[in-house]
Image (cartoon, rainbow, N blue to C red; front, side):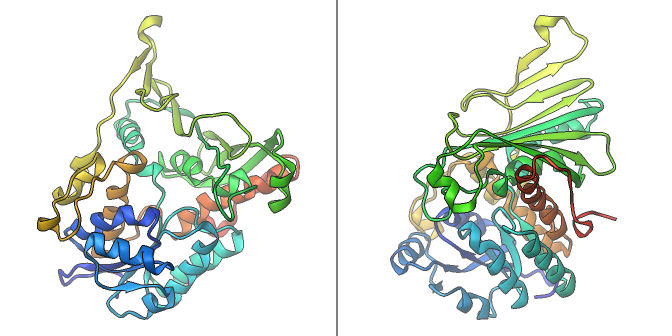
Amino acid sequence: MAAGRGDGRKVRVAVVGLGFGAEFIPIHQRHPHAELVAICQRSRDKLDQVGTQYGVERRYTSYADVLKDPDVDFVHINSPIPDHAPMSIAALEAGKHVMCTVPMATSVEDCKRIVELVEKTKLRYMMAETVVYAREFLFIKEMADRGELGRIQFLQASHQQDMDGWPDYWPGLPPMHYATHCVGPCLALERKDAEEVSCFGSGRIRDELVARYGSPFAIESAHVKLAHSDVVARIIRSLFDTARQYRESFDVYGSKKSFEWQLVEGEEPVLHTAKVPEPEIPKRVPVPDFARLLPEPIRCFTTGGVYDADEHQHLSFTQGGGHGGSHPHLVHEFVSALVEGRDPYPNARQSANWTCTGLLAHDSAMHGGVIRRLPEWTLSS
C-alpha cells in the first residue's frame, strides 16, 4: 500500500499477538476507516478461541505468512518485548506499515535500523505509547495548549510495578529498558525531543534476578534534558523488590497551575493554582474520557461497552477503557495517519528518541550517572 489512501477504501490490519492485542480487535473492527482482515498467534488453541469470539476467519500461526498476505496493509504488533524489533523490521522489509506496542526495541542499534527502514521505504511506523493518549494526559495537554499552566517549569513521571511471577524475559529486566510510559508524556507535552540523560541506580534486587541481565538496581531514576528547552524532566522506574501499588504517573509544574497524577488508583488527580489563599491551592479535578475526539463507532471503548453478538458478529464483550482509555485513540491516530498520508505521533524517529532515552539511561546508571547524549538520528533538525 502507498503511504496514504486517497481512494476512500479502508486500511486493512492484521493483529499480531492475542494476549494484550485481543483488546484492540473490536476497536479495529468498528473503526470507520479500518478493516480487520487477519489475526496471528503461535498457539492454535488461543488463535481459534479469539478468532471465534470476534468472528475473524483469516487466522495465522506463522508471522511470515501474515507478511505474505497481500490484503494486509499494516500489522499491529503486540508480541513479547524481545520480538518487537525483529518483527517490525521484517514487516517494513515486507512492505507493511507498523503499529507496535512499547518499547520500540531493546537496543539502540535496532531502533536505528527501524528508523532507516522507514526513511528508505516511506512506510509508516508508530510505537503505540498508551500514556500520551490516556485521559489524564489529554486533559493536561489541552490545558497546556490553552496556556492555562503558564510557563512549564518541570516535568516528572513514574512507572512502578511489581513484576515478580511474570514469565520468560521479565525477571531482572533493567527498569529503564521499559521506560517509555515515563519518557513519552514528558516529551509529548510540548512535542520536544530528549537531548541528554543522566541516571542513577538505587538499591539492589535479589541475586537471582541480577544474574539474567547484570542489572542490580531496584530503582533507576533519571533526569532528561529536553532539546531546545530550559525544562528538565525526572523519570522514576522500578520493576522488582520495591513496595508500591502499580502506578503510571505524570506531573506537570507550571507558573500558573500544576497538575499531579493521582497518588492511588481510584482517586482523582490534583490541580494546584498559584496566587490564591493557601487552602484553595490544591483541588481534586475529575478527568473526562475524551471520547469526543474519536469517531462515534469507537467512542464507547474509552470507558467500556457491551457488544451484541448478533449485531456485531462476535460474542458479547465488555471493553474497559484500558490504559486510561487510550486504546481507541491509538488505533484512530494510526489509521488516520495512513488514510491522510501523514506521520503518526509518535513516528519512527520520535519513537526511537523515547526508547533510546531509557536504554541510554540504564547505560548511564551502570556507569555511575555519566551523561549520555541521544543519537543525532533521533533528534529533529
